[in-house]
Length: 168
Image 1: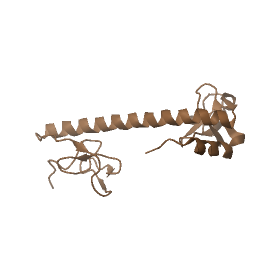
Image 2: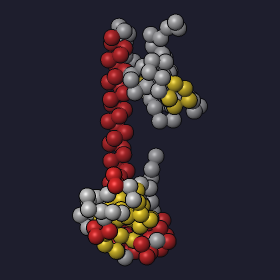
Image 3: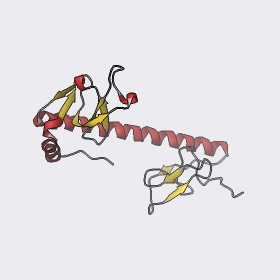
Image 4: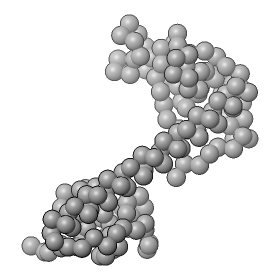
């Protein structure tokens, strides 16, 4: 799970990249320049011949047109970066919650189709495991996925678990 960067960590980051700190004039994000790209699919404008890679404090990369980037001070970077990382973390938590709800709904539907009772889901309760889904063959790990409360198998995004599984 991504945690908020402390004020000191953001200040160190800003000092490390002081010459290259930028804000996108339209989208508002802050980061530091990290080279360029010539891949047209990443360009902001159809007239671009090169895009600037901007590394964001939350660890992602954005591409921008040079004319959309404004140099900023380390102080402005630190203030904006803290807000930006906070928003990113909250967005990731919301996405995670939606994915969990979607997986639980698929699991519930799958059990209902098989005439089996739904007894809920849980977070990992044992050591870290890796496997694959018997139904759709997707790679699974209980580090990031839910487990079925009834059988203890890792839930797949397709809703499958060990309940009702029979060896062919």
